[in-house]
Length: 232
Image (cartoon, rainbow, N blue to C red):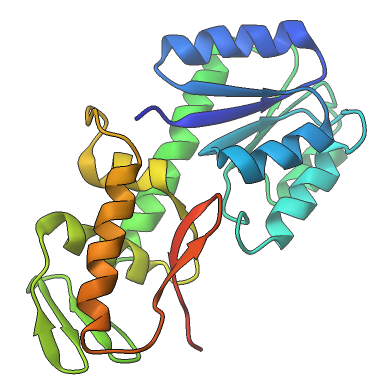
């Protein structure tokens, strides 16, 4: 399942250039030509990363960054700003608003691809680092080293895929993961299934947890994906 990159720029030739180069690297590209389109497609398409121009019609790039970082369902979306604004103050403001990287125009497509790959690698690395040995949320407890899961002190048997799914969700409380991301992370880049596979495993995982607990742990975020509820 290809990672999805939302490319937001009001210059069609730039979108086409980025689209061509990203597709050569195996990414799926979602184009948007103004700020309002971008915000709508973030919600509907759930991209893995956004390449964002600052000078946009309707809603500018700074405001998009601000809105994304303030929305708990999409706040972790990686953002690379691509802009002709070269002033240091603009770069600082973009990064302070939560952008992960800043590339100035004119740009090298090869450099942009390298930045995209680097940011996506960093996101994966940060997620992996969050996984502790033992995580306990209410009456659900997972031991990552011993490969053991307990619900209300009752051990439940999970398949390897179910265990990995639960470990990602519990290691990143309240963070929403897209079906495409989970499919890539758990089944691998070359898996030829579709995102319904994730839904099936989520249903099985919920059923096993609900056998011993009435709490709703795994939350469906409509049109986006899944998260593990933080009860704090």
